[in-house]
Length: 393
Image (tube, rainbow, N blue to C red; front, side, top):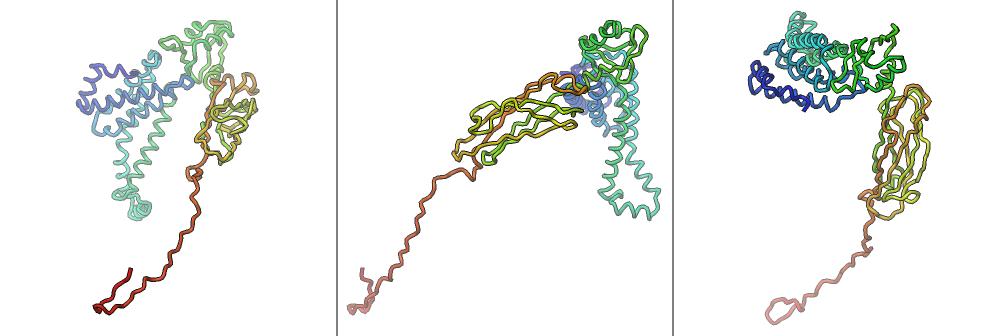
């Protein structure tokens, strides 16, 4: 569990003192959930800032509703402590970031204070308006007893949230560079990784696998030169991955369409080679077989569609499947904005259903016309024996 430090008796006692046991446990459980989710989503190709933004936002929103009734300084410090615990769980030393964490508490406290005052300030401003202005607002539903009043409060809270997000964006602007890439960069510039780390006062993760590099700074080399962190782009902006959809169609559709998607658009066309692989469906019998067919994702596009013809044989065979393989050949891309494709070979599964249910062939019913039994009525004959009428059968 990433949030293991939050389970210490000292922290639980600390939070119980302010919130009481029941409320403290509720917040503690929520903090653990938020931190675990942030850990699962942590992306070493993003800055620490980008990774922390949702974590900080979720923690702040979780506690915001109680700001008017609870201690603001505790809330802001609690978020800072939680972020510190989370960074530590990721192996990131807090040493050089202590000022950033303090600045975070100030931003959080300011946000929570302003948020707690929104409804009061809106009512205060509304009361200062003349009747004509109030009537104009009422046309749009903005009046204390109308639904538009709460809508307006929500809009103001969202605007404040955006302001808060922008204010904290610059607090942790560090890229996490794998140590081997950092060492290669140092060697190309006639020095060692340790020298660069020491001379530039950089932070290294506890496991030694990453170096935290300021996003907007220059790297001082031993000869006195200041070099921009161009190599940051190698890890952040020049590594891509792609995926393919797994479509399902009826054979009566006549075709099956795949969507190939990149995680980042490129400046030049990206070429892939596509091939089909037989499964329970057979190439050139159930679908159009292809081999090493060139497929191009156009520059600037995040996705492109590819269609394969499907045959309809009119014989009900339940479902059939085949595979589509996409291959990126290293060096085939000519632009300078791509260094590596994480998954150069990827597979997708296509499923063909023979008929829609309502079109499935059924045993025909015999075309037999109903036989009419239009017989004359049974005659009734009178008798003289008893004066009664009898039907003779």
